[in-house]
Length: 635
Ligand SMILES: *[C@@H]1O[C@H](CO)[C@@H](O)[C@H](O)[C@H]1NC(C)=O
Ligand SMILES: *[C@@H]1O[C@H](CO)[C@@H](O)[C@H](O)[C@H]1NC(C)=O
Ligand SMILES: *[C@@H]1O[C@H](CO)[C@@H](O)[C@H](O)[C@H]1NC(C)=O
Ligand SMILES: *[C@@H]1O[C@H](CO)[C@@H](O)[C@H](O)[C@H]1NC(C)=O
Ligand SMILES: *[C@@H]1O[C@H](CO)[C@@H](O)[C@H](O)[C@H]1NC(C)=O
Image (cartoon, rainbow, N blue to C red; front, top):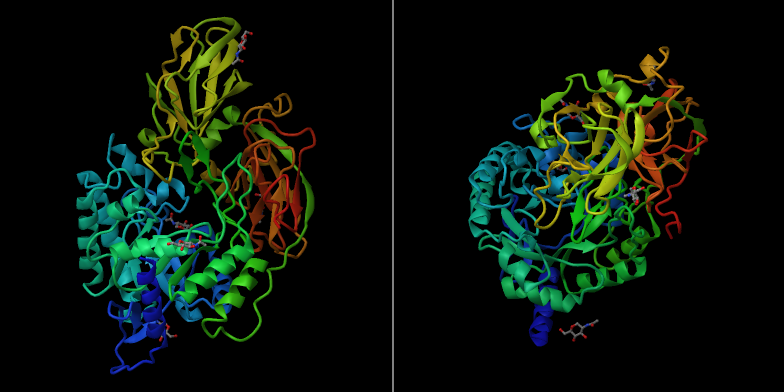
């Protein structure tokens, strides 16, 4: 086997050395099975690529990141298309602003970068529900990523919108898309449904044309390759620095005896979950293994090259032994930082690439300037229960038993469940989530007084006291849907009855909360002349809103927000949802604020929803550098 690989390596180097014998001016992109490489315009071609997710970077910084990738010597980028980012409501598509995929492709094309497109429909990506829209869960027991008829119908409708938009961007049609991935690591999914993959193959062929190079990517085991690969889709592998690359490519060879070697996801770093240590991958190791793969003639995509940020509610989660949600930053310890700055790792990678292809001359663009704006004092607006008129314009849905987020059709963020105490509870009485049905965190108060919280998988009981008829408010947080594995049917809210002492809690008023709508319209700053109800009396525990302003100083620079000694919550600036903070849990300690969000002339409006407890000193700090971990700074 090893000899076979060695022989093959020789052939592949020959392939890369062949000079072109281009006969016509026609654009083409294909696989050369004879010489084990790609052919671009009939000439041998190898890509050195990096992953970048437009959905994790504000539009105004797309070009900056792409130029830095180009200047590193990459000739391609790899791009996921998150379905739920474009079709958050069934049948309503958004391809504008930060969701303008074609503008992103255009910028990449202008920069001189080819594109490896990964349109899913499932993408994983540590993104909410792996990119699948949560409205799919309205059908109970839908089998996602299978030939389930409702799932297939939704997929077909979506691809019939997306792929015709992509078709003009195919390389053969004058664009920059050279290859298109079908599904994503499908072999890791329990269903292993070939009918589903065949259906996708038919759709992709029909909508993009017979000649497009379609491929699959799977983890580096025989089982994954067996369920993920399908005839007519070129099988590629993914692996990181700890894998034996000879072994890994040998496995690809078992499924593709001929054709280019491809590592579709070479891990330059790794993601963080709340409560886990900050992940780092050594730069020397990354550059050494990259060099080894390039020496073998392989095509490599670095995942990630630029990670970006899980703004708003877009982070995903894993569920192996327990639910673990992905942090807001998707810095990934990647060669370009979350804020798009070149790192030592990038320079080491560029030095390796230089040995294999000519890299653009000229300096690497510098880091975007940062600014430490310092401290801002915040003040209390009020607790969530007293603000429902503003935050829940639709008002409550009444139901005997609790309904899920999906049933209410509010897919992301927070909802409030209200009922009353069925009897006097003078002694602490257990409130139990017997079937572990709180997805994912519930903040419980009685008559506006915070009593504690329930948490999926880990905190299934808490104590409550109060009098019969007292109002029980349970704010439930969706912490991001599972993006990988067999538990991706991840409904949110209160999924099964809660029990208080010996009573099942019933007769709920369920308030969908449009926090983002209210804040986008200027609340609470636009109301700040009014006095907020009961704001003096309320204690600073439980879910409470705070506001403050960062005075403009003529600079709109990137900055990092630190909510030191705050516990857990969500924060917005000038209407933009920056994501979740949870310094008490870590590792992430600061939130990235892109400079162009800030006004140079108007007061910058900060809104904080603290879910558990604010510090005595209500203030936020704007720093000029990120802090990814409470224990150690990024090296
Ligand atoms: C589409 O998405 C953009 C970018 O996030 C947003 O600004 C815009 O309001 C959205 N359009 C609609 C109609 O929701
Ligand atoms: C992509 O860029 C090339 C070269 O700059 C240009 O000729 C081509 O028209 C562009 N394609 C599209 C679809 O804009
Ligand atoms: C990788 O595996 C091959 C056998 O396929 C072995 O010869 C080689 O020593 C291994 N390399 C490393 C670095 O362990
Ligand atoms: C609830 O209260 C009882 C009685 O005070 C106490 O023994 C028990 O530990 C408490 N349980 C929780 C989960 O706090
Ligand atoms: C902040 O809110 C105030 C009050 O509504 C408003 O006048 C101001 O324009 C807002 N600032 C920005 C940058 O939008």
